[in-house]
Length: 210
Image 1 (cartoon, rainbow, N blue to C red):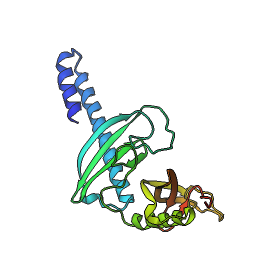
Image 2 (image 1 turned 180 degrees about the horizontal axis):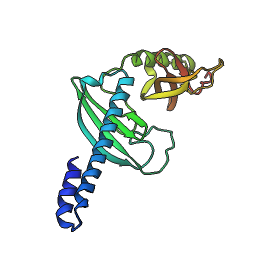
Image 3 (image 1 turned 90 degrees about the horizontal axis):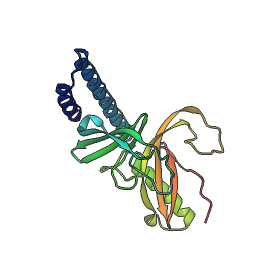
Image 4 (image 1 turned 45 degrees about the vertical axis):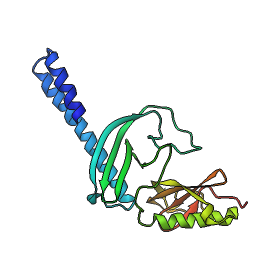
């Protein structure tokens, strides 16, 4: 918002436009504020889905940003991203236990607190710790290694269109929005993905026994 004010303060005196110019500038500034507020609301809702009470958080930064690709500044190793300029917002919220960073672009939002990839938010989320531990144990049994040797790369909120959680399932999936998380684990230089609705964990894609 400060950037918008600075721009119009400098530009308006120089321009020799008619009476309607000031009104147009105000309208554009109001549109920017509205987009920013929508991004903040989406960031709060993303954290709410993740199990964090957003009413206890204060917004310390909300700035427009254009990312160089579709990773929104949170790239994951081994994933190809569209090399297109992606405009959005970087939202920072502060609570008593630390900061949360949420990257927004259109209808997409990612909790992102690390450099070069997904990392965990600064405080544990309800249920995700248990699901992550279950995923580690599942992977450990397949790769025949102690669960302590399974590294947690990170996770991000997801919404799937049915109970299959975006994975092939031997049982018929039931349609309907299902919220959860995509969990990334690593062992032996290879990454594995598990999807969870905080009640069950599914390796997706399935992992062949090693």
